Image (tube, rainbow, N blue to C red):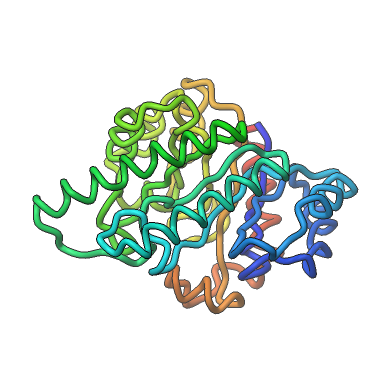
Length: 282
C-alpha cells in the first residue's frame, strides 16, 4: 500500500502557484498527493502531472470541496446542476492527472445537517441515486472511479456510516462507483471501524487516515491495528491518504472545526503520520 497526503494540510485551495509543496512532500516519504480542487481552471492538468512526475509522486485522487451551491440531493435544481457540473470537472481532472479516482462527500453540501422527515429522506435518497447513475456513467467514459465518503453527524445528516454508503453504492449499481472511508469520521459514527472496512469490502476505493482529534495517525485513540487487519482481510491495497488539518488554513479549519494545533505545525503532523502509516499498513 502507498501513502498519500491531501493538499489541504498546506493549501486551502490548490493552484498552479503551489507546486513548491511537492518536493517537501516527497522528502517526507509520501508516494502520492491528493489534490483538493476548488474549481476548474485552478490548475493546468498537464503541468500538474509533469510536476508530480518530476518529484517522483503520483496523484492518488482528486477530492471535492462541496459548498452550499454544490448539492446534488436538492431540492434546489440550480444547486443540483451546479453540483453535477462540478463533479464532472473533478472527473475530468482525475482522468487527466492519472489517478482515475474522485473521492469525498459527493452527495451533498458539507455542513447540511438537518432533522429531515422520512418522506424528505426518501425523496433525497432517490434524487441522489439517480444523479449518481448519470455521474457514474460519465465517469465510466473517462475511465474514472467515484468514491463517496460518509461524514460525521455534525457535517451531514445524509450518509454517516459505511452501511449507508454501501446501500447507495449497491443501488447505483456501477462497477466504478464505490466507497471512501475516513478514520476520523468512522471513529465518531461506527460501532467498529474494522467492521465498517469489511462491510465496504471490494467497494472500498479510498481510505483517509487521521486521528480522532484530526491529528497525526498513531497519536490518539483510533484502533489502528484492528483497521489495518481489516484492510488486509478485504485485500485493499491502494492508498491510505492523510487528511488532517491545522488552524493555519482558516477556511478549511473553520469548516472542519479545527480550533487548536495537535502538533506544532503541519510539517510535523504530516511527518509523524507518514512514518506511522508506513509501519502500520505498508
